[in-house]
Image 1 (tube, rainbow, N blue to C red):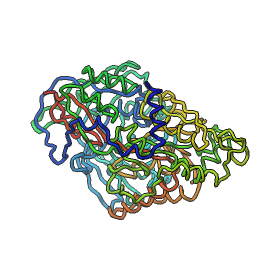
Image 2 (spheres, rainbow, N blue to C red):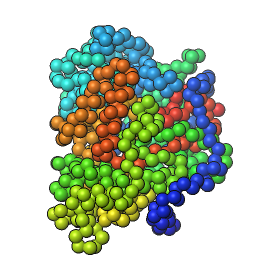
Image 3 (cartoon, helix red, strand yellow):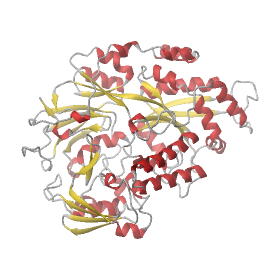
Length: 579
């Protein structure tokens, strides 16, 4: 069946008009669309349980070093920050902080902490935990992390680190910044950590290995609504309500209403869908190709949440320190080469073959969910054109010198690429096969090799960076600056060449400067223009070749009250209850 599908993909890809036809399976499905302005939580009742799908085992249970969604989706329930985003108003609101004052044009903040907070082991929460979290962990140069990446645009030296945060009393902390920093309040949504549990790991110099997947769950202490009760690799993660969680409803009842949850670990999305159909899970994210199957399941509600902020892309390894042949590094570092490959990707075809017609081509680092930064036709578009793609490769010296159908570079090396993705993700596997077929039409030999997701992440994020090309994705962020760890040349997730001491080329230098400038610009309209310029440059350079933006869809058995999903997460998830 799979071979038949790929054969059909090959035939369709040869005829451009095919994607103008509509998808029959999407017409018979009824969607519910939600208006966040109408989200009004009501009083719920305690009890019941929730079951959901986790798409893989976590690599770590440490929120600071977690980078992949298999880890973050497991531990997000365990921690809270000083602030959080209200997904109804899209404004920053207090969380562990009770309130704050801003002084000196946004260069000094005084935060007043809640006095009713305890860690999940009963230890009182205090300003010492906040100071420890930021000074000793996030801004520790020996602990690479995404929060540090976001702060490095404004905290640039040891003097800035020393003056950044200080304790005024047990429930008051002061932050000082060398310059105004527009996303600062949002950055403070990063998890606060328990000093009494983690300080020893910092002192011993082994913090990145703290709270690994073999740690006793009782040792993992947070301030979030849940704690991990039990984790069995490859099977499930059991949660129970944090008995010391501080949020209450307006009637004074403790939250969360639901006291137990189970995350079922299912790596294969098709198997996950079957588990959902047998009611092993209460809800599931729906892929476009699932619509026909989903439409046959009785008594479910299907939500259309709009375009996803997540992106799927192909990225080439441009890291000079990577364990790949030098001549391939030269190919990948050539902008014309990357643009040629981008022109060889049939995004329209992928939208219909892979996403059932419920997606749109994507050329930029951001999707329509990122308004006002996304603007139709503002960014360069690399339309599908195999002839143009081949002529661009020939313009930089590639030629089929021996007549075997495969191009060679000027030194005679065959244009052969090993393309990886995560095994079990049928969307990416199908995209990879479609790209392989098209690239081979223009003389690029592709060895397509799906591998285990955690193995893939390790190759991408750690020496010797042994990979050539990868199809993978990012979840997206509300504020462009939160993607600094991806777009800034020093970022840990700057995938094509991470953790650069200085920008490798002029365009990366300009993007670095724009991201830092945007962070300091307090005028919202000017910030938008700064980041749009940065994204325009990234789009033009194509270090990551973006493919498509599908709709975000969610299927749920309607047994819950206060169920308010959005593309950015659930509104007031702690108030979800079983009817």
